[in-house]
Amino acid sequence: MTASFLVLRGSQMQCGSCGSGNHGHFIAEMGIRSPGLEDIDKLTAWVFPRLNVCLDCGSVEFVVSKEELLELRRLAKRDTAKSTITDERNL
Image (cartoon, rainbow, N blue to C red; front, top):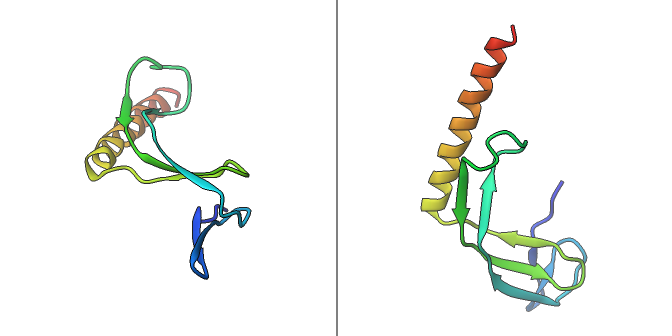
């Protein structure tokens, strides 16, 4: 179970995991891919989210753009289709 990162408590935003008000905002560059080592050099979706990081416990929250979300959906479909083909071959 995960907690929402920033929670409004009174007039201050606090970490949903540890309750700290000590957080920072950063920009990230992430390559997201399916788990496993096969095709490690393929099927990567690049996203550039703004990160909200709790500077006390390390919890991180981010949201991807609509375009990036579409790419992640395409990646998931390719991964699901590939898993189905592999499963059928193992029958």
